[in-house]
Image 1 (tube, rainbow, N blue to C red):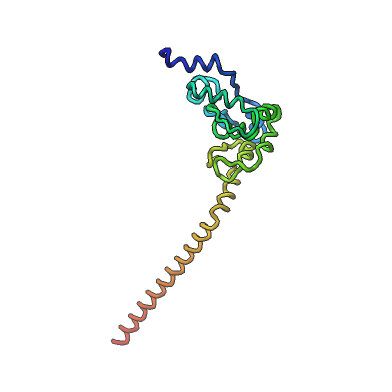
Image 2: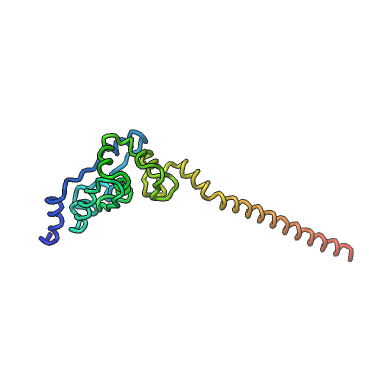
Length: 198
């Protein structure tokens, strides 16, 4: 590795404040849902923030390190900070709660869903992010969710399409039946005509 390529990693390890994953949240999810989750629920990299891989602190550029430090200073909610080691759900938590409230909730991870509320649904699958956190499903993956909930949501979402499909199928079968009946009448009238000519 050339000194120039090594510079961002050196800056990350010497200037950046330590960044730790918060296993309390993972432990709560596993205990509550029975599903194991990794750091990818909130972080860019599934192994968490520490390391040299993409999405970890050691891989950040100087500008990304500046973003990281600005995001770490977002103590109050609504600062719209973008943390390069967090994914959209992690950023959403910090922007909704602020770093101060988040660190308080860390001691009581069961309070996170209520603090987040039910309005955010980043993957637009119909299940709020807070409920996905409780269930241990991924808030950024629209195919990740409780199967029964996803089924009911999609049933409601596509109810009109399903009704129209049933109506179209019924109309198609009725039309096919009518057409076959018409062919039958046509054939029987042809047979009657042939019989009368003989």
